[in-house]
Length: 294
Image 1: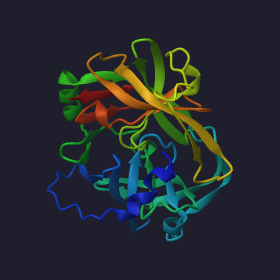
Image 2: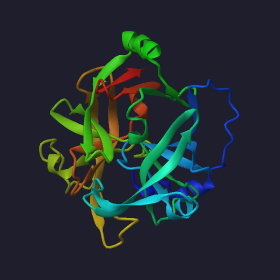
Image 3: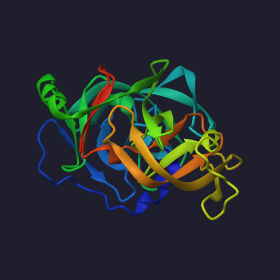
Image 4: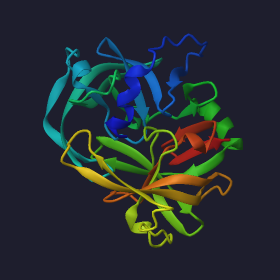
């Protein structure tokens, strides 16, 4: 997830989660941008965070991080690469008492970014919940922690999408799945809840195979986008449309005639937001699968 995509979020009204929820449910606000905003408390400090399946490491803003009195710095660090290829060298810290709704973890490994997220206190990675099956319920607007019994019920009727885990040194976790592009190419795409609404990005190396002519300005728009972290880093992007993107495992899970961005230097085949997959998406990382209810 790119920080620039959420800079405008300073405009959102901070929320109090007044809806009725069960003890195994964590309410979220679905922002107009497509992002999931959750409340969490770390080291007894409460904040508002984007829950993001495309960010490998949980990262706070420096302003929020500076309030954590018991953060302990590791001697070593971690080098991450954004999807655009931009390198990030970060320090790692252990923080105590991570709470998100009824989910509690005694300690979590995190980092911080000296950037303005427009009123957001940071980004919570999928890694926080890697050991617990859960569902993103877009109808009820909750993250639901699943029990073995409730997970078994979901698996009986939901559509299964196989996923692949990208684990890096047990510090970072993101997920991928295979999709057919225009019924022509089968590509492995990053499933990124933090990408933003209607965001579909592919590597420019697939332009030719998909018969897309970037010189045809009636069909393709070329833009330059600077990094919000390193202003000397810029990406070239070609914006056009694709006929279809279809889950390889489930032919009925697809989108048609959707805008797509082809990004130069992308380190993956592509990145897509996940909200379109279904009204409820259950994550079972142990089974390496998503279970989708449409």
